[in-house]
Image 1 (cartoon, rainbow, N blue to C red):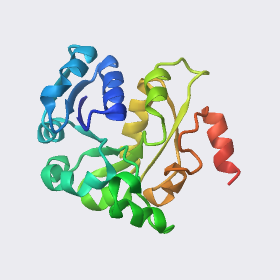
Image 2 (image 1 turned 45 degrees about the vertical axis):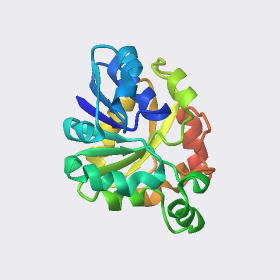
Image 3 (image 1 turned 45 degrees about the horizontal axis):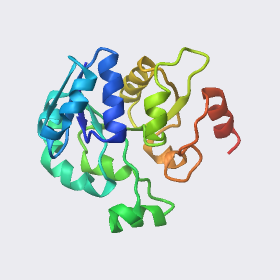
Image 4 (image 1 turned 30 degrees about the vertical axis):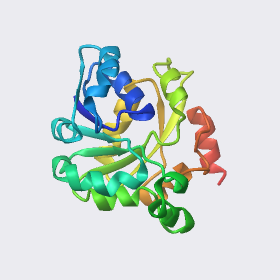
Length: 211
């Protein structure tokens, strides 16, 4: 699969490395793609670097891993390139970094963080994933055998898109808990049930069932 990574920092970069190791063709991108040479070398022959527009256009699946406050701006630049595609949203709202746009969603219990991505990319199938895991754990816990894997929660409004993301996460050695639709994704948000809490699938299922 051709996969475009928009934002190749701690989460996008490590996820892309794992995807390249699993045999996928990965295009890392950032505002300064020339600075991604080391990442591409580390990923090997299955990776290259480009602009965010190139990554969005070339990927049959696209990963959005940028500061939350930049989502509308990036959507204006590349939104047309992700029509009909699965878009993995790894973004978290941090008011101290992202300002009012994050403060608004964090202060309103009826708003979900990923709804901003859904609204900004209305023609994509958005799946919230990879936002709950600390990047060091994403780097170090991948490719573990069954029975010793950690689990990652996902949420989305389209079952086919969630299946696509689930398959990718399984390929790189993680179990997956589907928490439901985007409306159900509060448990994945900052300081909530699954945020930065390494768990096995059984532990995650138990925690979800005890709510």
